[in-house]
Length: 260
Image (cartoon, rainbow, N blue to C red; front, side, top):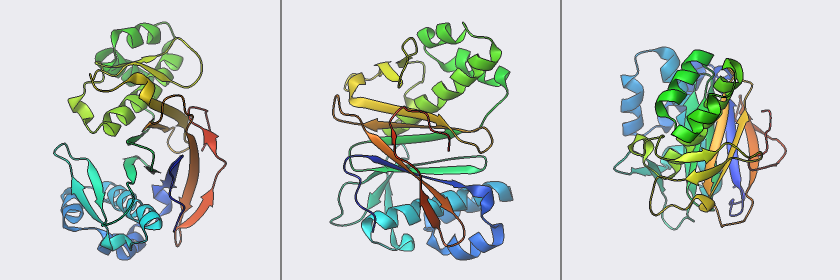
């Protein structure tokens, strides 16, 4: 078992294309439960099925390391808004989140509090700027518009991933419109919330990190509920085939850039 992360976030990442399609289906297909198998079967394209299988197999494998239960035996309950929770009798409270995008999957785990993880693949600058203008808070759009297209698009990608991470952490997804809450983009350092858009959520109760990944120009972001004024370290693991070979990368401070 892996040490329970009571004072940190463990972030596990894998390059999906490194895993063989047929060998993965044979090795991990039986790990999925009926609900996951039904979702997997509804996907039309093999690349999407493969992404789903690897990301959900990694989630199960990672969680099994913390709770001492075989991956196929893990059971999940689903919130009304679709957020899964681990069902393991007598286990500690383990918060986790899964995100995947083209070629990349990431699983975040912590015992501290609610957690959201988002990975986003790079998109053309005009696409990111258009999304920002449509979905960001007015104060965020105003800052984005100060920059030329390249830097503006990079800021938009970072901000979009941070917003997705927070929306997932509070369990609301798009039920919390991304324009309703805003980040402080004026000050340097780790991103901080100015407003949460929710009456019972204080900005200071949340800590964020965002950093690039080398897979398809992706961006990884996480949001974690923490004790006010307490800095949360992030420990990063890269998971490679075969046999789930695991290598630990250096620990980083939340919000500090780290090239994966």
